[in-house]
Length: 211
Image 1 (cartoon, rainbow, N blue to C red):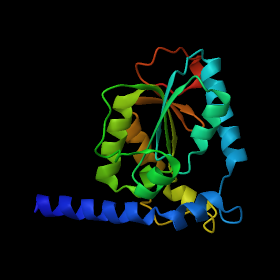
Image 2 (tube, rainbow, N blue to C red):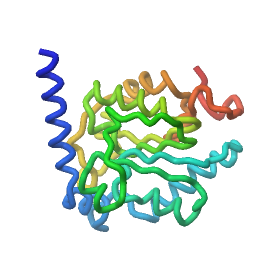
Image 3 (cartoon, rainbow, N blue to C red):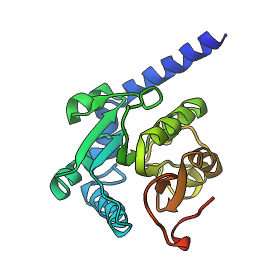
C-alpha cells in the first residue's frame, strides 16, 4: 500500500514537472501582460535581500537557487555580484535546457555542502504536504546562513494574489503550517527571510522573532 502511494506521488510529480513547459514560463514569467513580476521587480527584491544581509555583516559567497525558473535571480547576481558562486536547480527539464539549470528535485536532492543564501521562490506550494516537509528539511540542511522563501498561502489566495497572473493550481496551506515546519531549522526574520538557527549572525532583539 505504501509503495502504491509513493508511486502515485511520483507520478503526480512527474506530470507536474511536464506542466512546467514553454507555455507555463511564457505566461507567468515572460509575457508582460500575464506575468506577475519582471526583471525590474526581481532586481528590487534581490537588492533588498542582499542589502539586509550586508547590514547584518553576513558575507554572501555562495547562493543556491531552488526552482530558478527563467533565471531572473541569476541574471541579477551575474551583473551586481559577479564574484558570488551561484548554483541553480529546477525540476523542469524545459527550464534546465532553456535557462541553464541543473535538473534536481528538492524533495529528493540534498547537496553535501551548505550555501550562504538559499532562494526558494514559488516552489513549495506545488508540493503536497509530505513532499513539502522533505523539501523544507533539505533546504534547512543546505542553508548556511539565510533562506529567502516565497510560498503563497490560503490567505494569500483569498486576499492578495491576482488570479489572472498567478498559477492557483497549487496546494493551499496555512501560514501556520509553513511556520511550524520552517522553525525546525530557522528563525523568522521577516520579508521572506529566515535565518538558520546556528548562523553566525547577531540581530537586534526586535529585528527577528526568536523562539
